[in-house]
Amino acid sequence: MAAQGVHIDKVHHVEIPENNNHHQKQPKDAAKIDYSVRAQWLRAAVLRANEGLVSIASLIMEIGVVKRDVKDILLVDFAGLVSGACSMAIGEYVSVNAQLDIEIAHMKRDKGSSRNNGENNHNNPEEMKRKDEEYDEENHEKLPNPMQAALASAVSFSTGGLVPLLSAAVIRE
Image 1 (cartoon, rainbow, N blue to C red):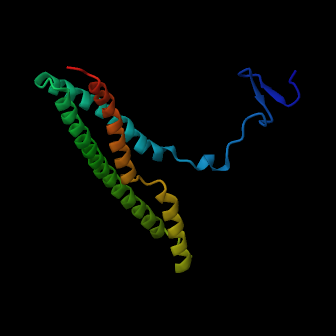
Image 2 (image 1 turned 30 degrees about the vertical axis):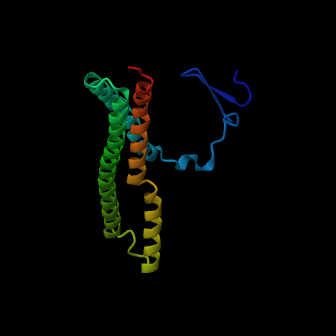
Image 3 (image 1 turned 120 degrees about the horizontal axis):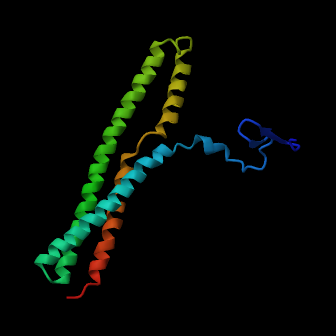
């Protein structure tokens, strides 16, 4: 009953093609992509854009209650935008830098424990050094980048904060 090149699984009644040539081939490097690295700066970007939007919108309402002059509102809110972006960038840098230190210490501990377990005892010192460099290169790409996270945080806060700031710019007295 099965067609040529197709196997029918009778238990689940699912057709499973024997030849998967009809599926798109993934690039050779697709399996090597670690999306968790992207998640670090993406998380920072999304959170900071939201914080910029809410913070600057709140600041506009607070200043708008006290001052009716649009120029004063825009000046104070622009200052809030700059100081908020700097604050978010510094906070993100410190946080990610601490995470980086922890991960480097963990990598060193793992490398030291593998040496103590006798995995590299049969190698000569030059080969051990080469393997250590390869290990460091492979894992360096997976490490968080504090500057990238700080930049993403500052840009995202500013982008989120520009939305209410530009809205306030069109307000007339």
